[in-house]
Length: 358
Image (cartoon, rainbow, N blue to C red; front, side, top):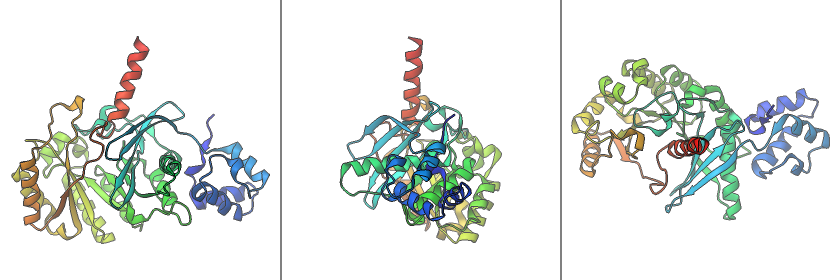
């Protein structure tokens, strides 16, 4: 039976676990420091922790549960990692070099059941949720990679936008956020963390009640139900009539800006008509909203879609801006590698299946 990842414990849970197993409370501070500040690779490297405690940790937990399978490096500095989990499943994690620091995009599920018709992540349905430790370990593996470069670089920003629906793995997501935000430790600022959801109204309300400063992004991608249902099947269960009131609740409760993500698909949702519909949908929420316009990364299996032409993108952008809705066009990363989320994973799984047949 596989041991649980030590990274899945928040500081509070680590403290309680050690005390329950006969250890002094201060041991948690020592262990936490070795894990997240000194970033050791083995429990035996924790030099000031007593032998009994180390044996206890070794017996119940693992530091390494992810194995690097593939690492793709882009000419712009983006690195996409394909990790194999203990059960053989594959996940993706992406490191992006931004002007403001090093940003990591993490995965929260093995596969995805949301089934957006343009997305490579949904090509393979959800197998299981990731544990909080498996999510944290993605950050740790990337940080170890940065440490090995010897440039004193650190992961400063995190986006939870990889494979899966984060709010469908809510409890593990929240433990992950508390671990990476904790001071001392990785100390990634809450305002430097963004969670992206396809739009689960009840979870949006619950997230609003958490009283944390983590940013929220909602994958909208269409300004009306007919079009959104066509490209995002989740809209059947949670149409705009359910989603937008939840967003209103979030804005009222937190008074924090929300980001709407809008992927531009040529001659599908990129006309001026849709831009004006989006203006109407956002309405008086515009002061606390930002629209992130995303150029489409083509996916072989979704060949019904093409990237919007430059003129359409500019017209859409100008229409929003003229109506006092703040927006921007996402800077692309890793376009010379498997840039679309889930693309590297699905290709590797195909390769493995073909090998097994031959």
